[in-house]
Amino acid sequence: MKYCSRSSLNRCGLIVLFLLFVLSSVLAQTGWVVTRIGSAQGDLNTVYFLDSKRGWVGGDNGFLGRTDDGGRTWVRQIVGTTEAINDIYFRDKENGFLLAGNAIFATQDSGTRWSESRRFLPNEFDGASVELYSVRFLNKKKGWVVGSVSRGDRIVDSILVFTDDAGASWQTRRAPSRLELIHVDFANEKHGWIVGAGGTILTTQDGGDSWTTQTSGVTSTLFHIDFRDEKRGWAVGERGSILRTTDGGLTWTPVAAPVRSTLLSVQFVSDDDGWAVGRSGSILRTEDSGRTWIQQDSQTKQNLYSLYFNKKIGWAVGGDGIVLSYER
Image 1 (tube, rainbow, N blue to C red):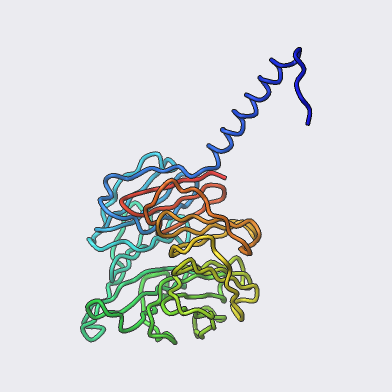
Image 2: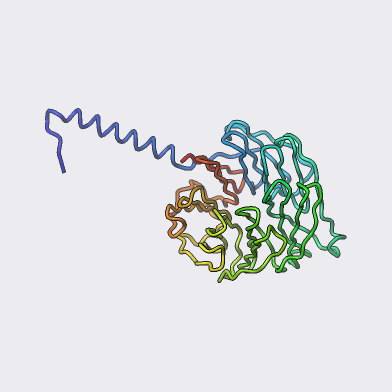
């Protein structure tokens, strides 16, 4: 180790101060910043950004917030529902969809106006209630929605819904599982996956014309799945569950997590760099394609329900209107 001479002490001191300033600046730029949307008056369940400026958050009591300045300010938009908004997804810059309770809402003008596209009523399901959780499109015309059917507090069936006319109409399809289906993701126009209760993983290799069951090796509920391509994917769920595949889900490998908290959302921003969030403010990061995960400081104990990265900017939302932002 080299030491400063008496004549260069002042210069060394300046250098040390400069390095500390740079380090603090880097930490400030790379950490998660916590804010809150006071008008949300409940939990935020989902977040979606079209670009670095324009995004939406959805939450309890039909709350939909929109930002056009990268999250500095949020304006509430009125949607014709008081049900919790569970998911938001845009298939292009103009056409988007959101799920609230048993209804699908759509926009054709970049989210300026939202209208009801389809509602699933109890009389269609022998008096049972439908809850829709996740929506994804695999091309301009074809999209899928998953959820559950319940009587009171008891889940009695899954629901799998599709459109092949860009959301003008929606039809139900029988899934190979009656357990609750929670999230759907597509790697391309043919390859897709669904996760849900009891370690359920379903897959399609023909754009959803047929779905088959994959062996996850776990019985815990899986809440979210993310695929980079038709081979590499990750799923997260209860009690810190993380699963990883490199062969399209033919085999799923459990990965040790540094937390026992339930993980609710996962997203990879590159082949190696991925994030996961969950209950009690849990945030995990991997830089080796999900082989190992490191816990991050979220500065909150609120549950984090949803995660979204747009290039270098990340967002996480959760309990009591909390919004976290991150810039890589």
